[in-house]
Length: 371
Ligand code: KG4
Ligand code: ZN
Image (cartoon, rainbow, N blue to C red):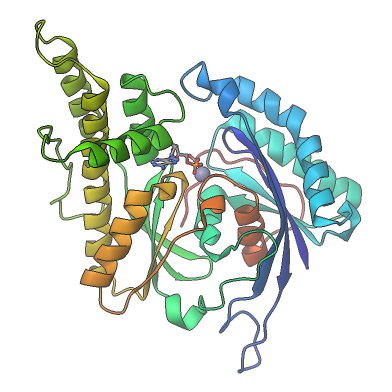
């Protein structure tokens, strides 16, 4: 069957076409034993990054207006690339939350109108559930990850790290979630963005901070002198906090700016060092809590997702730590194409919940929780 995914929760207008072939399990049921075969036929994302960069972050009313303008064009491109007509679609899946309400409404209204006009079933998808399912996707045209069979991955621990969320979610099976930890203040991606803004590195901050961190490593680690706290690393729960770390970066930045003449100011080298240590501190906390949660819940796999999962250092360090400290636990990470917001992940999450989905129109829930 063919699923049309639509995603407009933040500043990316995304439409994708997914083809799914249900696989029969040896016991006769479908999808219980083997994960269905999934192929991304098209995955179009129209980014508004340049537009919002001058505001240093996403400007909600502007984002909504852009979605409205872009949606018909992005849909047309996605259908063309998939070589299908809208009439061929079997299901429409649209992000209904969490996210920016004006942006979400543009996608949901657009999807509801399509569903009505072409008489297609429609389902509303949780954006975070979409990120979780990005782990099953392969680049456009390639077949699904066959090693991700249900018996080998569940219970799975999901570390979802994005601009709006930092969550540890225990997944007992498809559609069965329990949030076991979350951030008490800033999301980790938000902290990357704010640190980048403090240091004048532009928006979005994550990739810029990550790049400067690499430069420090290449230059010399011997000149290492900046140290930041690892908030809540020893707390007994699985929650996070990144606002203290962000404030520590702010104070350090001010210290260097106010130094008397003759001493090293906030030079590019110091900026690289601040980025490196900030990234290390954030990653240390994420990994430490993930490992502890993995042990406690005796999971079979750990999955990483969300915009910050594009961070190379996080991907590599988490993988190493899991193989060193969690016995026989598999590690999955999304292909780089699917780390940031996209509609292929929404289409897959929508397909997975279609059996429970109520027919009819979808409403936005901007503060939607997984659970
Ligand atoms: O999932 P996403 O695309 O949108 C939300 O749902 O929020 O995540 C965007 C976030 C931004 O905060 C961005 O700075 C961060 O992901 N990000 C990164 C990297 N690439 C994107 N953070 C750290 N390192 C990266 N390489
Ligand atoms: Zn996202």
